[in-house]
Amino acid sequence: MGKNIEKRQQLMELVDAGCGPMEISRRLNIYRSLAIEWRLLYLRRGEEEFMQIMNQHIVSSKIKQEVVRAHLENGASINSLSMEYGLSWSGIKKWVDKVKAEGYDALIDSAYGRPKGKTAPKKERPIPPKLLEENRKLKIELELVKTENALLKKVKALVEERDARLRKIGQELSKN
Image: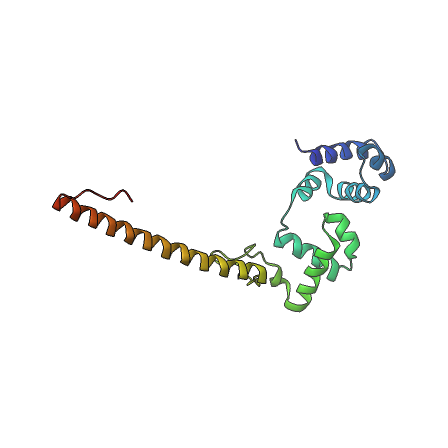
């Protein structure tokens, strides 16, 4: 079991035993604000919803709409909703602004991440002048080596041709 899940289970036991946020914070070695937030969430929602909400990484559109409605229609503060649902204040604020601009349909789930098959455009980085100069020198050197190699192949072919001619007429081959 994960360390965070164990802490949440310990928190529920401590809350059920009547411990306050300071005691929970001290015993679980967590920030007092986190102890307050988790304690309120557990007391308001119960064990099942507390564990479920704490395990959510992606918030469904149903929860988003519920939170925004509670703020816009019932006047609940974003801070209290943040604590009650275990969500970030900034996330709730973004949803509220989105609903004000586009309506509740803007919160309907859509695909997450970058669309399939599309990649981010590659940024052209300037090549440092030092590397450009080194590259130019290496290209010149490569051309020289290629030319030298071709010349040596040609000389070897000429020597082999001469040796073959000399063998044919029966003369001794040169040792050079």
